[in-house]
Amino acid sequence: MDEDDKPLGALLDNLGVVGTIRDGQQIVEVLVICKVVDFEGDDEVSVLLATSKGLDWVARGGLIAAAVDIKHGPLRERGLMETGEAIQAELSECSIDCQGW
Image (tube, rainbow, N blue to C red; front, side):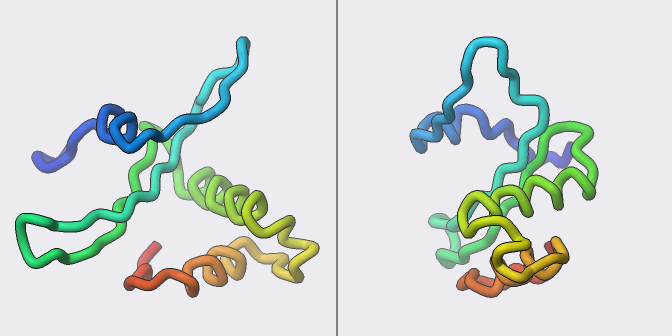
């Protein structure tokens, strides 16, 4: 863990992040994408990608693809069969430099 790393739970709580979890359900993997603004510096905007412990790149890509499907409909219906194409299509709407994801 980097010295600048901080737990995000309280920060997300303060932003009003909520989700519907029913009895018997448990969150087992998490991917958090945050827009970060440096208000003490030059107002630089960046994107923070944080994951739960042990989340590998395959599961991370799967969570991103699932989120794209929820927002835009299944990949097959949109003609985007490859997960990479779907992610690139989603990131192309991003107003800041998202290369390297």
